[in-house]
Image 1 (tube, one colour):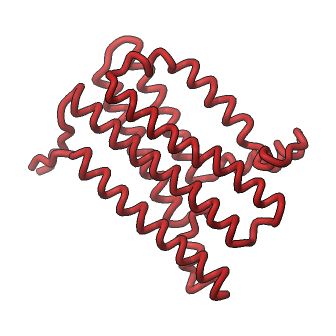
Image 2 (cartoon, rainbow, N blue to C red):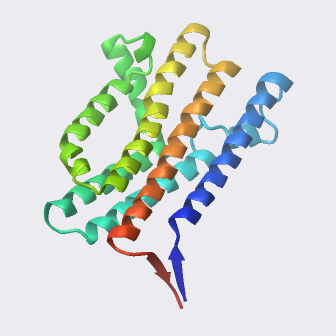
Length: 226
């Protein structure tokens, strides 16, 4: 039997999952800060977008790995330097998946903050090395991006902007909020909710963009089983 992987249907499934996870997280925030129930049989923590080893972090890691697989598929169908560039992106997304699952960037936060004495917009000090790495990747992949077909280039840039707005932009806002009033408050919770939502949305749109790129350059992806 052959199953055609539809970019539109995959995007819809991912968006539905994101909606359900964000809704569960918001209900958890309401339960914790308005009703005074911060456990509820473990469900508050299980759906907290700012906690590791739970449903949202598991989904995010899988979604990023899915993008890595799609990047590898494109790499295998490419030739010359393009093949290595696509594989390079696949490796980056594998790391991002591990980062999401293990919260590697958070483990850098306290040591970097202590070493650099950061505060304010750089309270979450991991932003500094990650922003520098991002700048380096933009420089390395700038020409590669410009050589893509227009539709793919626009989709990649758009999804990247959404992801970075969440991952860095709202991370800065959450750091400012935490520095002024602390972490245990509804305001901080809603900021990280928007942050994680934008990250998940950016990844979902990037997966859609990759599938559309595959449809145009390779053909529809098919899964075959007997």
